[in-house]
Image (cartoon, rainbow, N blue to C red; front, side):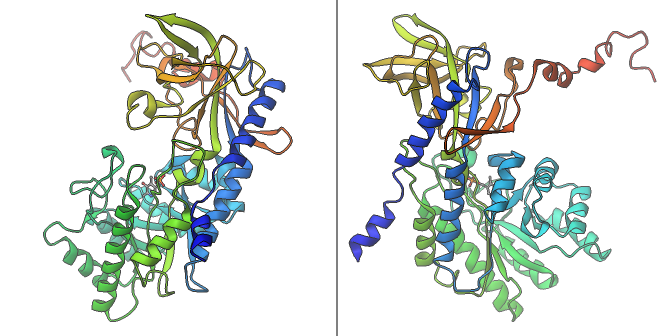
Length: 457
Ligand SMILES: *Cc1c(COP(=O)(O)O)cnc(C)c1O
């Protein structure tokens, strides 16, 4: 029995996913999606995305009381691509949105309002009015936002499920920029600040329509134990509100996302099942059926299913160091290039036919196309020597990477393709054209600054 559970806990070693990736890279080269005229693409493993969505659903279904409503709302910012949202919708996953653009993407994907949650820290009155009139769930970030919601509620605007986002202030993880539950985080109502907890409780007692409570304790770099503590603090607050209200006013807990992703190998670890079981252990009561649940996972759902593959345009040596100059750099991997210590990526080498490259390991740099010296995907990496015409693949880039284009050097957004069994591809996002770059760079306003009398109405 114990051995059986351990085997289950070991999760997925990712061998199947790695084999699918190798097949997709070879097929992309064979079919000409990748080549001299198309030197960079993003690839998404459709089978893998479906598997992760199923694992997420199963993990929570295994720990909640029968009949408990559970909404898994994918954090759209992780992979803001409409066909991906549609795929997730088909897999029973909703959307967590944090801007008018993300809400528009979710709606374009046909995401129902009942499975959409709005969380941005800077919602305007117009955004709040739209969300409330649509019936989309909203978590108020702060007292000023709650004032605005009060005004809308007085005018009879809403039928949305509404809650407050709290910051349990349980501390940060290894990546400061992604630690949302530090003492001074910009998100939510800081629960341990003087008077804040009492203010939150009173806010609920004064507003019978506040029925949800939200916390998102952090993203990559947060240990599981800290995530669980954030959830435990949120649960305890809901219990306190309901005790003081003398009824089950808070009926849904939104526990956020943030499950860390393993960027060091193909293995999926930790798994959703491990996290769900840990929550069941650490927060008894959370899953006993008294509370509906919302989760907001982003990176953990998509990261391991994306690969950016780039052609090696030139291979050179510099100061004795081998350097592969590829077409993937800061424009598709901004975090890795600017903060390589926090965001190392594995790089896989493929030959000119898209086959995994063998051969002696050489210490080398894998560089991008942008014009600054730090534009490196990997520095001093030991791997088979990349040569001109080969391909370098940056792995685990399905979330927060190639879908987050950074327009440095006016480099075009690469095309993104989904792949399935048998070398089948579908366009998820066309590659941007140079004409589109010109148009988006004021191409239609060419005379704006030089026209006679400009600026004078
Ligand atoms: C970014 C974010 C998420 C998703 O975080 P991941 O680390 O990608 O799982 C969830 N909820 C909120 C409020 C967020 O800001």
